[in-house]
Image (cartoon, rainbow over all chains, first blue to last red; front, side, top):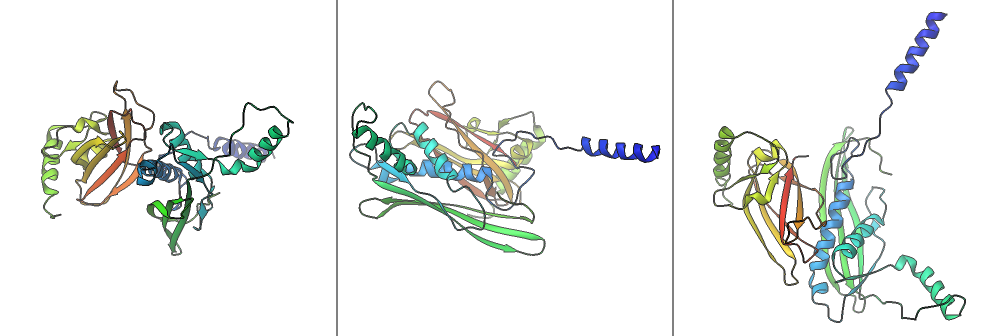
Length: 194
Length: 134
């Protein structure tokens, strides 16, 4: 009986010491848990490339009449991977707002309802106001999509992913700039993207 | 591009490898004629031994941003995945904070690949390219 209890206790201790510690890792580094889908470093690389190319595009560089206003729309995900569809536009916005020195103005269309409610409250006198201005209209729409091609066997998986952004003139509908980021990965099955 | 081109850096690398050893982050090995390689740093031994700089150039865009153009060669005969980061510095040599992420690039065996980055800020005056193996 004592031997059984001792063995059970040793087993419990053994399990307890095998608990994996959580560690911080560089978001650009190869992680211990990786599949063939979009990883943190891919997302960061895409956002960085798109922000730099967008700022240098002729549509933005040649725009006359102040900083061009760009409205961001939700990225469409047509790949098999589950990704946060706002993460790319969030990072692109951060890069441009922090570093572009006001050469491009980003419009937040996700807050239109809140902005309209606040404007109505100011104009009705329910809250005070420090002046009125027109809501900014967009000169361009920035849209993005994720597409993929997948192949697999019983043991391995291959994914080719293209992330494409385009800038569309909000008056004419003409595509003023576009760029794609491509990647292909091969690996084993078993990583779940959440 | 002729198949004989990578032979030059390979011989050059072999010569350097025979004389030098890895002592920590240092300038990558340069093809003959490339002089400003202090701006391209290998962060690990594999990157230092296998990656070469064939051409390195920087200039200004019309709106005053710094454009960096670097041609990297794979001095082995196998595909070589490397990660590249560009740090931009202001006129005082301070990092401006708009560094690129470490972007993954696969250099095919014996091949040369172009990597181009343009700063977002106009106060970027110089740069450092950091290369490492994943």
